[in-house]
Every structure is written in C-alpha cells, then in structure tokens.
Image (cartoon, rainbow, N blue to C red; front, side, top):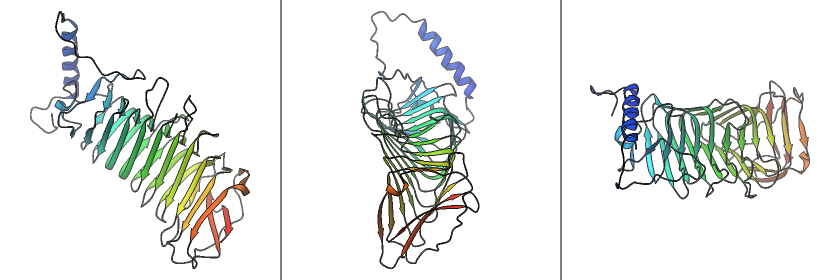
Length: 361
C-alpha cells in the first residue's frame, strides 16, 4: 500500500497482521490438499519475504508485490530473484538481510531512485547475477555488503554489479570482512561514476579464493565525479596469493579516493586513465600500514592529456612505507608524444608529504 493514502496501514499493524496470518495457517490441517514447495536455497539462506510481483517490476512499498502481502520489516530476510526488478523511491525502507540473485542461475535487480534503504547484511549476486543501479537516495548497511559472493554448499558462482551514479552508500561495519567486491570465487564489480561510497572498515577487492581453488575476481571503477572513502585499508587483491584477479581504475581528474592505508598485492592491477587535465591521485591518510606495494601491474593511459602535468612534490615522508619488490612493479603505459618526458604518479601521505612513483617516458 502506498504511503500517503488515507487507509495507510502502519508497519506495526502489518507485523501484527502477518503474525496473525502465520498463526492461523499453523492451525490448519492440510489433509489431502496440495502443498506448494518453497524455493531451495543452497546455503541455508531462507528468506522470510520474497519479491514476487507478477509484473516483474514495482516499488518496494507495494504490499501486493511481496510474498507475504506486506512490505518487509527490519527483522525480515529479503530475496529478489527470478528476473524481478524492485525500486526504492521512498524513505524508511528496511530489511534485516537482502540478497539480490540468491539462487543458482537466477537474476535480480535493485533500483534506488530516491528515499533510503537500511539493512544489516547485503549480498549482490549471491549465487546468480545480481545488479544494483543507484541513481539517488541513500543505502546503508549497518554491518556488511558483499558484491559478488559465494560460500560453502553453493551451487554456482555469483556475479554481482553495483552501479552508483548519484546518492550515497554507507557501509558501517568495521570488521575486516565488512566490504568485499568479489569473494570466494565469485565475480564482483563496483562502478562509481557519481555520488559517495563510504566504508567504516577495510575495503577488499577480490577476497579469498573458493575452497575449490577458484579465483575471486573484483573490479572497482572510479570515474566522473565519484567519491570513494575507505575507513581503514584499501586492499587491492585481498587474497594476498594466487589465485585472484583485482583491478582498481581511476579515470579522469575529478574523482576522489581516500584511505587510511593502501596495500597492493601480487595479482593486483592499479590503472590510471587520464582526461585532458590528467589523473586524480590516491590520498592515503597517514595510516599505520602506509602504502605497501608487492609487485603487480600499474597501467597508465595518458593519451587524452593535452599538456604536460605539473611535477612538484615534497620528499619528506610522514609515515612508514612498506614496499617489497617495488622496482619490479610492471608498468604498462599509453601516452601521446607531446604529453611529457617524465610521468610522476603520486600517492599523498598526509600533508604535505608525497610519495612519488616516477618513470621516464
């Protein structure tokens, strides 16, 4: 039932009605009546509310679109599967846990236009192909958000994509597992072209491989006016060892990326794609881990630059830098003949200290 109607039923009334309905059903004797089997969820995730709108698309606030006849409460486990699309356009939408594409070979889409959605746990592309398209509004996870997920007992590798073009995402969990893009053999992609994505804890790209040894694949693309703020460590290739495929790309000169520390592992790739004005740096806020480079690839595409960049930096380091085999970090560069004779990529280590990466063209 849509908000603003004179016959609006409060969330409390909905919960009471739902409880009463469940109690009355529990007293029924089925006899010879046909029993419709519930979906089987391989990892024992049993949703209490499923988006099953017959029109495939609709607003979260539409009671008739939910399997229970009521929109979810803060204690509900939600599933969006079977090619369904659900839209957030109003304030106060809640769930305990939400999974988009939670079953093998399924798909689902969550679209956020305005308003806000708050949940404790979220998984996008849990076993199937899940997508979130956020064009505004606010999404808050009070504990954990995984994009591209898999776990013990799963039947398939998940594929999750989160596209943020406006609005905010706030992952408030502080555990090392709170934010993952691609984990346990799954594939995850986070595209931030606008808006602000914030994590209170560690941000992991390509987390641990699956038990079967399958590689995790994680990609984060920061472009346009996108902002990514990481509360502690930005870990590019969170597996630390083979297998794993991690890619972090900063495109243009108007993006913002800050972290308390940055770690670049052997199977990671860091990519900078310039616009006419150059590229944006990674700002590391003088955290205890500093910047750790352990081999990997650095990709530079400076072909769009129209002038040589200003090359100025301080040689003073305000925090320790741990770097293994920094000289073996593989450089792959594209630049125009008129760009510059010296390329200098920098990671800011507080103010005013700058740690430079420099190569001659």
